[in-house]
Length: 479
Ligand code: FAD
Image (cartoon, rainbow, N blue to C red; front, side):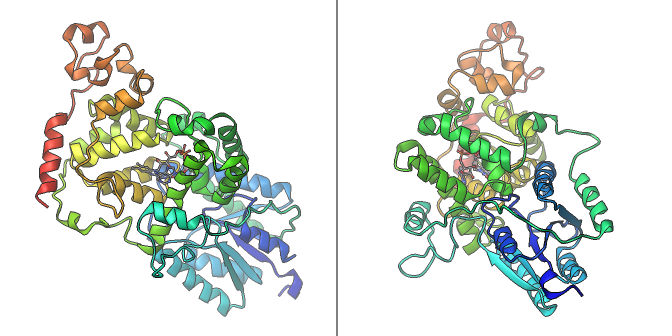
């Protein structure tokens, strides 16, 4: 046993991979105890949302960056692999930890797991301290006048803004660390190696696009405030432009905290239009978490019960064509290929590909949610499910099912010069005007001149847009 003051404090990092504005780290450091910084890769416990391939790639970089930061303070990150419920109490026992510090999770099943771990730790004499570190405010704090929870984002956001959002904390200046057994440390890096793709290494496009980590996340935020926030109300819908912050993977992994974004926007002038609209998007993120907390079925069931009778189509071929960006509808294929190659896709394109899948192809949104979960670097259990239900019309506050995006009109409006389609569907790059948006309707000479052979160099559409739309409306009416 160590002397009482030398007993370590464990900081358990989860989806909060940063040093600044980290209430759990802050508190553990302030206790004066030597720290053990822990991360667990749990591939053995059946998970609510198993880590997708893209997010595993991101995590590999984010953990390395966090370790680098801790090493600057003379410590390190201990990454263990195995059952969370076994490993946490085991480590606390092995090191005689006095306390463990973490941030609350949101879903009831995750909270139940945290409760079981808490009980095991407390029985061993290890104190558990939990904080809210991945949301602006405690989801219990925002209540309707009747004491219930909000089901409409606008009212929720209005109520939240009357709350005091805590100021973000600085990174601790001084940290001291507890010695970690060498055997555990050598495994730590091996455990992380398993996160990266090797044979084949498909992550080249990811590496060209992203650099995970806290410093990079802060740079994204500052660049966005400097260059794009003022024009956000227009720029955020232009799929070919860098009109949005691209902060999503940093927020999802916790490299940047929502309170840091909130505080930066307040300083920048939250009352002006660009920052105000941008903050309302952060409001959607918060609302998704709040909804997941209060309605745990969000990722699993249609929130609007009438859709339980919906006859979704099962077509493996159509689903595959959608996943691979081979539907023959250029704006849809552009979005799906951007996703495949970079692990991220513009919000407008997410809405277009989501509407196409759930309406024109009449395939269940859960298929889209699962594909995004595997391929997005910014995948966020709450945001992904809420947005899929929104697009499909099955959510509590969702776009009505009968509002069906026409992909061609969307492309003409939000990619007016066709730059986005040309970038991601290069086989069409020599087409222009309407033919680029609807190659199936172009004249043969036009296609020939641009070197496009429908059905050979680029697919014919897998669904006639009008027929697909009518079929979706018919299915909806029959509910
Ligand atoms: P910005 O426009 O710069 O917005 C800033 C931040 O606000 C984002 O990083 C994000 O955290 C939040 N935000 C923006 N739009 C939304 C929104 N509609 N809902 C919730 N939060 C939002 N976002 C994810 O973070 N993870 C997901 O898994 C995810 N899946 C989605 C699936 C579908 C079908 C759709 C339509 C949207 C999804 N979104 C998801 C929301 C949105 O598309 C992304 O957050 C956004 O495109 C990220 O780019 P950005 O950081 O440049 O966004």
